View 1: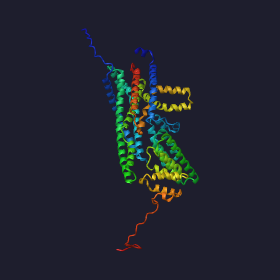
View 2: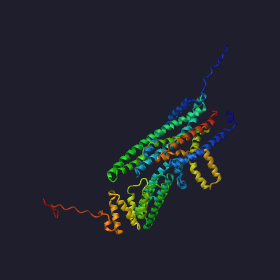
View 3: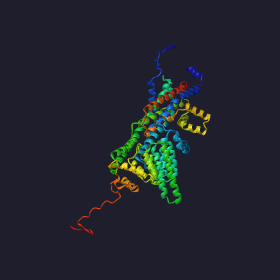
Length: 307
Length: 279
């Protein structure tokens, strides 16, 4: 019986503390995972909503009809974006545990922050792609209706012979104002900001949640509270006669729960208001702040979690 | 870091971090919110009344950040009320819509049109109701339209469209020439002012008892602007005022009465009485 000689292994290559390459690998695999779940099928439902609203037959002026198409399309887009962000994010970590992919990933030299960041990036890539696709569908519909209305209105006003060139132009400009404008892209960005914050909060909840269902329910509840607390605060304070207890409660809620209502600034843009770029930048900064803080909070829970 | 993580319960650390972030972001968010509201990008909270009247689904939609979407679907519901001539339900629906989107001018214009024009017209025609009730409801709807217009103008003080709709209610339904003239006068100079607002202000002022002299001066000023203002109604109104105010003939406008039939063309010489044509 020969005695086997143990040869010491060569020292492994030092693993960098943080690697964007590893994050990107996890992000792309998350995108693949979500695409395989046939998540993009909801685009069909969205297209149906847009086509349906584009063909509503109610007596309204072209301006009002265009405004209605935009409101319904962008409202639905916003709804799909945040709902998708919650559901997709809530499914990811439990699915990785269930498939045992998580063990394989974490046994490699992958930091837990990289794993969480990669997952979040993957979700955001899918949400972003979906929003761009939805915007394209909606832009086609708005452009088609706008062109139709412009031609019809121009022909009708010219044929009547009662209007001057300036009056016709004024009317056409009014229709164009409610048509396809570059600013609508910022409205899509606003929905993306909102969905990003929602996804970051959901990934934080999923790090300590016992099931996907729990994560989805709690995230939706937080979303509703985060949206309503500003609106409801005045109502509660008024009803309670400015009671100290209600004031304290409102403050606690404001501090602990994200203010999602702030991210609804797409509504103003859709209604034709001018975009203030400084405010959009500030909202982008706030979104980044939320992402960093909730990612770090997720790490705090996830860093030494045993599976 | 690790010893701290082991010593302090994780939940407390998470809550502390959340609270710290909340304290830092709260003033930033308050400032941002004020700026977004000032830029009309964010809607102010709906009125308390709106919450009380909303159905459960509308309330959930509103709380879920879908105010525009809810408002649009309520517009369709209002159209349904219009089809069934349920005017009170229509007004209540629009009350929610305008609370959700107070800065959307088209909602105010629509509700004034529905209540002030359609509902009142329905009361003029609905023979199922006794005459007294129809008259009472006619007035009620007309005054409701005026109240709605006032509420709309409180939200959008520069709106010409709301005033135009209000003027139509005064003009067509209440036959109040003085109020019609006042509303058209308010439109002058506002963005989106139609070209006829100045003329209509004068026309209805001419019909307002006690303001004839003022109306004459105003309409004459319009007349002196040139040929493009020499429209049949303007000429007719000035001529009526000239009669009423006994303006001396040399000072009267030279235009012919637009209502007087023009001279008939001379009969063809080759046609004899009785329509017999001489070749």
